Image 1 (cartoon, rainbow over the protein chains, first blue to last red):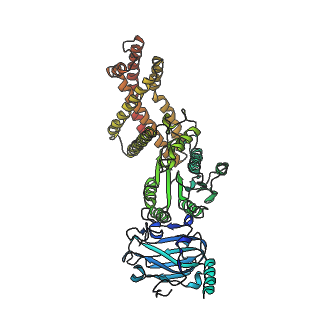
Image 2: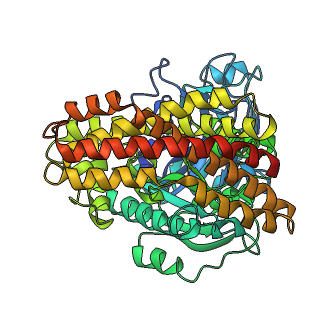
Image 3: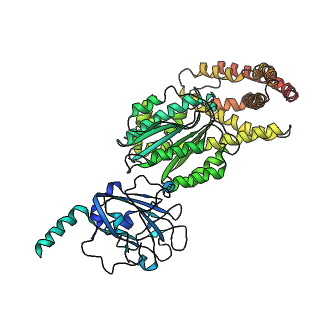
Length: 176
Length: 406
């Protein structure tokens, strides 16, 4: 993954929040008092005081299914400078993942987050690897300082849905 | 109303043939499993329960998590007892079964019945515990049956590693008159964490178990939830107290095994405690039987006066014969002899207590509906005193002969 980021979110890329299938969202090793909605849900994630914490150790495993097929363009992970996540691995369309088989598959993409990223700079993913995503698994392997607990304040996914992009593209051509 | 997927790990090792839980450890366990399955599937229609066995040729999953109670009950039939329990493998297989549950909204829970000794190192168990915690799996442990060195400690270490916000529980069930399932009914394993559906579950289970009034403690938890809760809490406290007492008694017994005659005095202290406890028990019981208490009292006293010496004489000879064959058996017998000799001494203490006529008559006078001046009661007291005196002599003779045998 390139460490470079888009200065602004590119045209045509939308926040994928609306396409998340909330009934299937799962997070392993989350603290029960600081759970995933704190980092993912609208409203909660904007509040830096509300964050997702890891529980038994520093790792976190997030499983996010979507209501329709999407393309993932970039991801934003915001966290505190010290306990914020560092190594993040992304897997597309891998169901039933656990900490025990996280190393069984090669990740679709991997990112090492910099302090800049943690302050809100999105990270571009290998766009070609995420063209047909029904579910996304995010594995946070460690954090910046190697402390026991990892904290995540905000996770945003940018991309586009497969059907709607085609439609919008068609309309744009008509406009010109 | 917790939405849960549960895996129940059954111990079907050879240790389950023991009959110290009626009718046998295995049957008692099967009853408890049925009860838990019923409660879990009833507390939420989407709950699922699976069953696996930890002993035999290896860990075997009998049913993957399902909400079909019939399937679960059916798989419990024709289970074979054999082999040793593999706790670590059982828990890990259970976790795998839970991981692939259909409905990801379900919380994961493993219920382990551990009735045989735990061979694994404490560290291994703690590691597994941490893994469960990381995968947000809750763990309930029913500790019953064998009580060897460090088993309780190991299981508690395992629980401590898993426990997250008190969602995991452990229950120690010592062998005794209470059925395993009856004991579990009032524990958090059975009632769950949520207060909402628990009352219903408890009531349903009590009815299923054929309780006298249909409800635990004879109180409908739906009508008076506060009273039911209070009763349950006091029941739990009482159980904790009994457990502590049993542990203490076991320690005393083991001390007695090792040492000689010196500790007899310390044991006497606990014995009198026990005797007085049973006396007060008898008192409360008498309160209940107002009608024909004279006849019953006589009967009860006669029973308690039964000479324990005769029984023991016979037993001892049997045992020494058997002991020559098998060293393990000999050890077991020695333990049980220690127990029974304890019993008899407690009985003699009791009779000493009863021999004190002023004490007995004061008890009798305090009972409603009993006239201490009633001639039949007086007769009885007089006869008791004679009997207990003769028994005391008997007892004085006995201990040396027992020492020799050991």
